[in-house]
Image 1 (cartoon, rainbow, N blue to C red):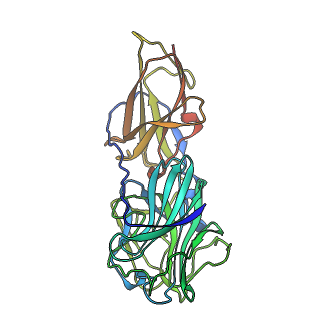
Image 2 (image 1 turned 180 degrees about the horizontal axis):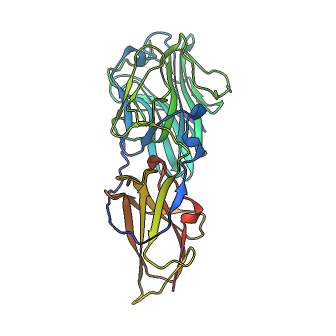
Image 3 (image 1 turned 90 degrees about the vertical axis):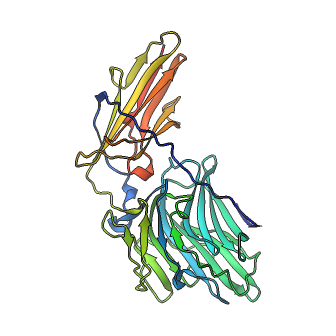
Length: 379
């Protein structure tokens, strides 16, 4: 589905976790986990890791970012992104230059369906127009490009969205003369000053002063971009893991800086240990609770540790439940304390069977495995 809309204003929202610390650890089962294979970038390089809470990357206003402002000034904004299926319903920003352009995704806007939006300002203030495309994004890497063809014909401009090899949305309903507004705002990638942060990984992010993609299809590159005469800025995000400054490979010196926890990350084969725990004596993965006065209580706990054994602190962990062991919903959102621990006491007031698991979403670089699941039978 594609459409173009012109509006006057939009209210941004910020997704915030409900920070909660706890100290509870009982019988532990140590599990060796590795991050999903797609956590690595092209050719095993680092990626830009964004926690989906307040991470983003910023660069002060530069001429390289003031694209599409002159007569016949075209541009393409593109990036490779990876998002987890546990991201939840939220807005994830890819590019944002306030007063000029924005590319973002409404994740799970309608059930599992996502909406990719390319927005251009039509003048000073809050007036803008946008096109969008509805799609259910599979977990893993995707290529996305937003194209502006200034004067695609003598009297029309063209906006287009390209995704994973296909043009998925376009419109020439709006004409800019001579071009889009020249904003003095900073360039933000992965969030807008911490608002609407993207929960995942980015790499191969490029700004070009040309129409990179035209027609109904294109070939998605399997290797890093190479700079050329039309490259205004190019960030591979392939610096050493943990880097907070990101070099511009175009040679123009448009370096970016990570804000809050935004940094490069490289998933190595070294396993990360996650230690889940439960206060009831285990019998395999089945636990039976007997209610007293109509209610039974069970406390779930988990500890996150790095390969070195050090506690992983202030990381978001979800306690999830399921009626069938297949479809999961989040019961509680917790953050590890200074010991890397989380816990939650759950009350069971009715007989029945439920499945429970700890799940650390994409922004913490960990994921759940089947053996971490627990089945609770309440009598």
